[in-house]
Each structure stands twice: as C-alpha cells, then as structure tokens.
Image (tube, rainbow, N blue to C red; front, side):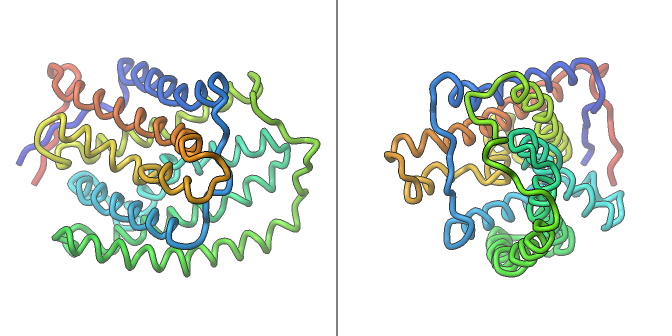
Length: 295
C-alpha cells in the first residue's frame, strides 16, 4: 500500500512545534508557578508501581516500533536501535533536558549528567528489545503483552540495577551537590528560559515518532490522535502515575493527583497537539506532502 509522509523541515512545522512546546510546557509551569501545585517527590523506584510503568513503556514502544517499521526498515538494526534510543531518550527528556536542568538548579554539573546515565541506558535497553524482537515476532496483542512483561522484568531487575551500580560507582568521583546552591520554585528566568528551550527535545521526538508511525496507528484521525496520545503518555510513564502517586505521597489524594498530574497533563497536551498537527498536515495539498514509495 502506498504511503504519504510529511516533510520534516518546513517553516510551518517549525512554528507549529514552537507553539506545541510552549502550550504543553505551560500546563506544568502554570500549575507549579501560578496555582502553587507542589512538585511531586517520592515516586517509587522499586516494587510493583515501576514494574507496571515499565510494562506500559515497553508495550507502547513495541507498538510504536511496529507502526514505524515501514520507514525504519531501510536502516540496519544497529541504526534502528540508535534511532529508537535517541527518540525515546529525547521524548522522556533525559537526553539533554533532564541533566541540564538538574545541573542548573543544583549547580552540580558533572553529578547531574552522570546521575542521568541509568535513564539513557534504560532507553537503550528498550530500543534493543523492540528492535531485536521486531514486528514479525510479536504479532498478536497477547504476544506483545507477554513480551512487555518479560522485558519489564529484565529491565527492572537486571538493566536498571546494573546501570545504578555503575552510576553509584562514578558519582563519588565528582563534586557533590550542596544545599546552599540549590534553586527552588518559584523559578525565575534563569531557570524558565532554558526549561522552555530544552523542552524542544521532547517536542521534536514526539513529532518524529508521530511522523514515523502515523498511518499504521489506526483508522481515522480521531482514533490515531487518541492512541498516539496514550502511547506518548505511556512512554513518558505518566498515564497512571497520578493515581499511583496517591499511595506514596504525604499529600491529600486530590493534591497528590494534581501534583503528579501536572506532568501527565503536560504529556497529554504534547501528544494531543502533536497528533492534531500531524493529522492536519497530512491532509494538506501536495505542496506540503511528499509521496514515499513502499514495497
């Protein structure tokens, strides 16, 4: 079946991505800075909650990779792993944004970047998993579910502990963060400006994932937009996080949902607005659309 693809580089797309980034990040910024919703802390890193999160991440990654395989198959498996690692890391904001912003608010630059290694290595493991198993080995939903569960077991109890051990070995060799150097909310322009600028990595990654997978996600624009938004929230570990956070936060249930929910709403806005734009641009005249040959 023939396929259509949108140009990745157009002035309209650049403007659209800027608007999407500003609107999405402003959801969290307004809730934190204006509404004084507390920043979440204490989300569990071990146990059943991160395991369920990892299952969701792997399931979404499997679907996105399979939907994107038509475009990715022209590249070697190594290149596909690299592409998926970069896109997952950027979407989860751990490629540049997380270590940079942690460094800015703590003034401990090497500590922040080394502390980010487990997140990058986890994305690498997820990318290896989905590419190695491939779209032809996980045909049914049950196959995907079983693979996601097995992959989550390997990531949570093998990959992440290994990455954490490496990080813990390296961190004592770099300057440690000091409490007196920490920058706390409400943030000023020295934090807000780089926060908005570096959010571009998540916006660009979200757009590319949508571009790669769009025509295979589902039938009809509404279904595609909804499913794509769910996949993005799963990949960012934020679909169920506000509910899970109730059981681990010292805040009231409503405030706990709002605290973690500010990031879930941000991810929802990112996926929803990106999906709407991709759906819109695919319907535009030939000047904005290119035909891609498929076999």
